[in-house]
Image (tube, rainbow, N blue to C red; front, side):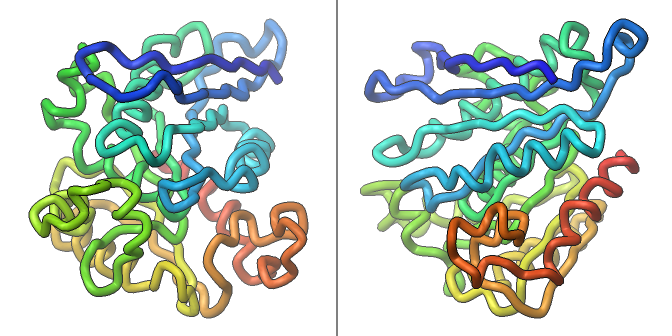
Length: 276
């Protein structure tokens, strides 16, 4: 495995506040000279944390699982509050474009770059899936819409809606003072932005999630189906929010985050990736 880390430098046109920069880490499979020409799918992982912090157990441990299945993995440690929308979205879009730009060097299939996110990170990944073809995203980056386009999305118990089932904290941290605006909240509600341009999606949630209710995924699934977007949706009966891999390795000392029935999601996502 080859490990690369770097800072994401947004152009001045983005007008971001503060000097803090996002971090990107690449976990690249290195199989020797006989495999250097093999192009592999890449998964860009966005940990959750309510746009207030980042849950590390939803980053590198997940990347290791994708590596074990033969996929390159990237972890984006995007900026959170006081950063505001669309700053983290610009960072994710920039990273996707950089992966595509370096696809030959890194042996990445440029037509199989998938964004994956957990909770608020799922909202971030989903936002790129909804907004990749919008000028306010690619324009300030000096990129083309096809440069930042994700080829698929893997969303785990994502924050989706700012409506009655919304996770209010995520939208407060994402929008700041604009969180009081119904127009702004609806603009970042993913179920209202889905369309035929939205990439193929793998989605999973638990019915007993009390932090980000399952209705978030149900609303998104309904919107995707309505717009004829390819969808694989897994609804597990039980498990709290923030499961990550649902194993002892990612429970962070909280036994309630070990949920054997949910542990299959990562292998299901791996199989889904084969169909891209």
